[in-house]
Length: 487
Image (cartoon, rainbow, N blue to C red; front, side, top):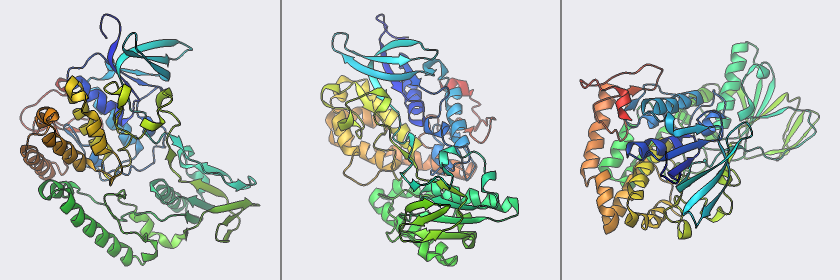
């Protein structure tokens, strides 16, 4: 692997969802002089570090790309890991993956015109790997975020990433901190564990800034994408915002919990849609919710909030405070100015790529966004003239602007290809003018009615579907294509 000098065409750092998507597209585009390096002993990135019970914020349908399907309505972290394993197995990516390889430093060599990566590869071994292009997929949320708390240690405190078993919550007074997806899941699991125990404890939910969650499952997302395809993102966003706000308001009104609604209206462009958690609404009477406050002190098993409220005899505090980004991606220093960019410019133009760093916090679907970006990047990387235009793509996708979902990314890329003569031909090969919308509409409708699911951007539209709901495969259509042939 690599040319005669031992220099690879590219190295991808990070074996999470983004890294695997980038590797899969590179291999499909016949780039075989490539390696993916993951410092952990297995793939998965953040999803391999969060507990298996953690509910994903994306709908399971968001992972149905390139012919993969699912009928599940709720996924957990373990399901995401299974989907990553299936992508690697079906597309035969294992020969290009090196787990247990920690990139702790890198530097560009002008003499060799390549990156020199310093890598620990386990057992105290050290090696240098050289490559022409460095693709960082190290993730933006990698480290558990634990805020400082003034405590005397009388109440045990655990971050959501540390929790594997729920017996500790049985019959106890538990304080959950956080209003995001992790906080919601902590509340749900504490209530369920206490319900199974038969002896209900008490749950206090501390929310500094109330977040938006729907309270009801959205079991079929494909009409939202159809709206974006047919009406354009601006018009469809207005319609969807109105529908989601009205539906959620009615749901919370029905349960008598309008006080739980955030003061700011939901907007797809700056708020992530968190579906489900209806269990919280049905069991709201078992929750003592403290909104707009934080933790002040913990003394003698008494938790004092910033508004002066005291929670006496607390037994356990669980932090649903999320994850923070690493100080430097993959041991690469001096990149703070580039960290929120999709690709580097200046001296690193065409040789350093920070894929998806700015798009992980989108209001849309991370798997689909990664897939779209990987197709665009590997297509443009093959042409020196196109490489010079990458800063334009970076500017189009980066802030300041509203968050992007997957269809927004496609529309931005297509618009850039229309306006730029250099990028026009390769982008139209990926997304043919007008016909890509028709193709996607037909694909969504086909899978939605036939399999009660949908598939994003499949290479073989109707030839093959691979079920992610277990180890089994399901061949669709009459082609009977061997999944191994997809590699």
